[in-house]
Amino acid sequence: MSPLVHSAPRCETLTIATLTVLLTACPPEGGSGSSTAPASAAPAPATVTASASSAAPSSPPCAPPCLDIERCDGATGQCAPGCPQDEVYIPATGPKGFTLGTGLRGKVDKPHQVVLTRPFCIDKTEVTVTAYEACVKASKCEEPRLWGMWINYPKLADHPINKVSWSQSKTYCEAQGKSLPTEAQWVWAATGGDGRKWPWGNEKPTCDHADFTPAILEGPSSDDGCQGGGTSAVSTHPKGNKVWPSGTIHDLAGNVWEWMLDNYVPFTGKDETDPLHLDNPQGVHVVRGGGWNRSGRGIRADYRGGAVVGYQVPGLGFRCVRNPK
Ligand SMILES: [Ca+2]
Image (tube, rainbow, N blue to C red):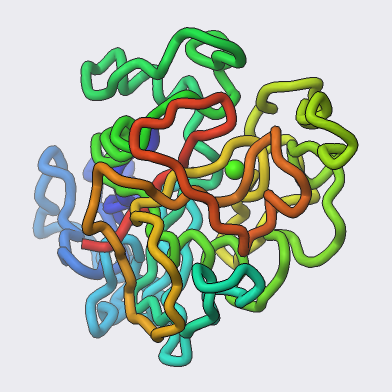
């Protein structure tokens, strides 16, 4: 997987050939303020000329300090997204929040306002077989279910891991220093809170948008996805991307359903701030986004699914989020 949160400042190395002295000139970094020179760097001798020492930028540090998922932009003095390369920075919602729930599905789905007070990073893709296998080999994760149909592990390396339970998924995320998304985080990341039906907007889904089952209404034998059954490699449906200013998220709709950290509880209509409903970890959890064996309705961004904690099925996987410390 990716390295932990960026922390190494972008350093500019200046070589003064005649003295063979290395100076590191690093812009200020937020949070830890750890803009120190490498231990191996030799101290600059007194004979270094003014022209060399003046090359170091002198921008003020960001104030207040940046979060550990941000970086301090030395040019502006502002905090900027600083998620690892395979994650997308999702900003906080702002004080007005966004509407969660549609009211279209009775008492479990009443619209209410949700405020997320903190930004977070979310994986660009569903967790792949390759990534999950690395965790298993490091003895930090359990193997998924390895019997039945549509087993991705370990041969379909660039497909999403499937047949993993909620607990196995949670364990994987935590082994990366991350977490399963809350339901509110996932919906905010998938829609930006503008009420769109699918992550890309309101254009009716096709197999260019997502791996799902367009013809599911024609009969029970037609839940075979866009590939004749089973998942697709991640990131292979570009029309279905959700684009944020800091990056693009793939396959939020379809391919595999994604485990949420929350239990499945009704949306009562009460407004909430940073909601997490986890009173019964061994109970039913929310799953979001739909899978390859679901219809266009089932892959809507506002569609709530539920699954018991130990469920290990071909159309269910997950992705992780990184919350600021
Ligand atoms: Ca998905």
